[in-house]
Amino acid sequence: MACTAIVGINWGDEGKGRMVDLLTEDFDVVVRFQGGGNAGHTVKNELGTFALHLLPSGVCRKGVMNVLGNGVALDPESLLREIKDVKSKGISVTPDNLMISDRASLLLPWHRTLDVLEEARLKDKKFGSTKQGIAPFYSDKFQKKTVMAGELFYPERLKAHLNALREWKNLILTGVYGADPVSEEDIDKWLKNSCEKIKPFIRDTRAYLSEAQKDDKRILFEAQLGALRDLDYGTYPYTTSSSTVVAYAPIGAGLPDAQIDRTIGVVKAYSSCLGEGPFVCELFGEEADRLRKLGGEFSEKDGHPYRVGPIDLVATRYGVQVQTATEIALTKLDILSALDEIPLCVKYRLNGQEIDEFPFPAALDQCEPVIETMPGWKCDISGVRNWWDLPEEAKAYVNRIERSVGRIVRWISVGPERDSIIRRG
Ligand code: GDP
Image 1: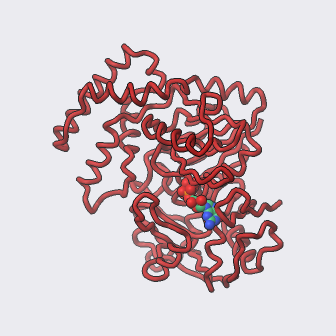
Image 2: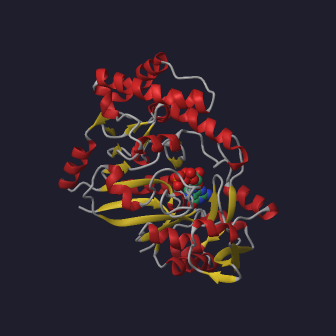
Image 3: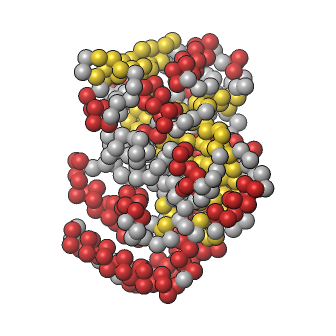
């Protein structure tokens, strides 16, 4: 049976959660295959507005099974907070609609602490981490120095394992950073208050997904962040610490033989970038302030302004290639409605030459954007539901993106609500 993936083409925050929430109508299972409680998906539907971090965005649909695969950074505390939040808005979260892979590694209490300490040590060279412990978690996972969720069912072994890890980690916390060590009581508290509560959700999800595949269930893979934040293909070292590309989905989801025949790449109608690192198309000053305000590109937590720019066709084409996207969902087109002219970054200028190909990360600092403009449509399009009802200028903008990336734009999102969508062919 066919599997579909929804992935980010840009720097993240493209509106993947919004697309998953819309498209889960046609799916039985939604699987998150990487990432953790750092970047969030905002989903707005008839039940309310949800800031989902770890929970798959299928949680808002009745009858959909949501799976947290082995590739995620499973933070029990942040997951429980999220479950509490969605439950308070009337959504039921039980083992009947949420499963956690027994092979998902646990984000341990010291990972967040280490993230904060390292960002503070880096001072102005910081990466702009969300301080959720993601980088320390993934590096420990690859050093084989964390525990798998399934180990919670082997308490004796778990205790010895955690004590050994704690002993090692305390050398780093106290020796390198001069911070307080983590005590055995801290860990016991964490096990009792958080880990015990997620146990009912843990199971062999590989076996479940394999059965689901045999039963012709429709499976959707949901990614976090975007291609340009992928550990291998992104703007390293200003990336996240996991694989955000679709090629990792079968592994991180726990369905190694998944045949993904549709990959929906989510592209935002303009660019935004949370955190540090090269961002060639970045706007500054009044122009940036205006776009930022129109798009609401501020941190929900502390109002911190995000970096913004016009759509970057060089980076978007590259994102489409590394994601092997078969089709595009273009989001937030309504945000551009107020502009007289729509800027587009169509090429980069590097060493006096114009280039179309996304360069090696170290060269990005020397690249300048080549900007072209297209006429704006200057009217509200948030109520449009039919391609033919879009103003000609908006259609021309979408067609330009389509030609540039070589993929059909199958969905155009004109608002955050579930039904604010234009479907094409
Ligand atoms: P994700 O991490 O890729 O799911 O993206 P986020 O949820 O972090 O960011 C997307 C933001 O844009 C959310 O606040 C959405 O509600 C909002 N959004 C998504 N699509 C649209 C759209 O077409 N128009 C507008 N105005 N907002 C949108």
